[in-house]
Length: 502
Image (cartoon, rainbow, N blue to C red; front, side):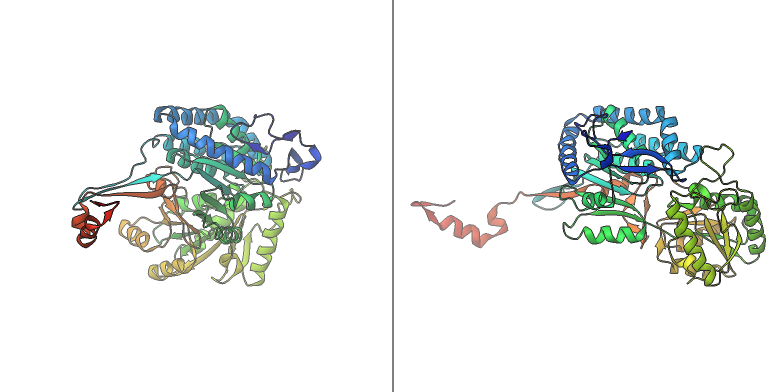
């Protein structure tokens, strides 16, 4: 079956392929390499048409009463909730998500849309009434088209967060679906159109299509989430058109386990943080600093638990961890792990595909020690279920060491003493600090990306500032004679056509 690669305003849900031949498309495969579907190839002309259509739809969206827009967004959220099972099936097939992981992603998407629907019509500016003789105010203006170019894992939540922010701001939204996992996002856009959320669209295609969307002159704001090397290319490409960006790049998120932490709680939480979605979640922890008094116990518990995690297909209800997105990603992980071991790291659990699943994209949960701060496993962005662990003795030193990393997305802190937890959290340099939790995601809470992890904020009311642009309007109420006496006198004395110019 040939799936349409373009979904948007004025494009029939069942007719987006435009009659193109099936051999003009590309295959979507599961982790075993089996073809799940075939998607027709998108052209630059398709993107041009879609950007124009979204721009026009955004103008119509802004002209609708606020209550009508709110209702449409809530209808979209309800449609996603109603298709939770089907969307989860697609995520399992194309992205290897376990059923529980896929359903959680759909739930998060629904939560984002419902939250931001409450901000429709409430994007306000400021009034400056205290300037003598003048009156001014600011307005937050939409960008017309916000484009999202995002990673394959977590795509639905990213789609919903960026789209609903755009809709609340009065902008349209165009999602570039990852070529390895486009089916669920395309269905999400179809549901938006059916719910009456007209200015939401999606397009699937190759890397070249993503580059074309990223540099399109009709895109007012680009939101990117993905690997750092790709993100740096996006930043470079934005220079020509000076396109504003919101960037969430790959991060080496760290967890600090203090000397009074309860390991019975910490170890399962930290391992779940790293091994959910096979270590491909952007907010998952990658390295753990453990106080020396707990280090051996932490490692022993982590290794024992990692060895008990059953790796298997997303369709197997007994699986506790699914596959990586593709065989290529598994090969990249194997190369990275080999480089880390060559540099002195020791693998205590995992380190290879499971014995009963040697093919496909499966990889065992892996626990590594003795990786120095310069080891590739700690220095570089490693995508996959590999957790590195090191010990520390002094809190001040470990805070400094954690801050020495250029990664600045999420850090976790585990312990019991409130004063120490507060002190450590205040000094850590990251966009989000999660205390005694491995998942602090909520639509109400803004998360910013610090350092090389990107820039901009998503979540909360303050994120609207990044998805809008400021316009300042100033009125000068004083007479010209008070502002520029000499020029006023000259203007009054000047005769035009024989009459004094007053």
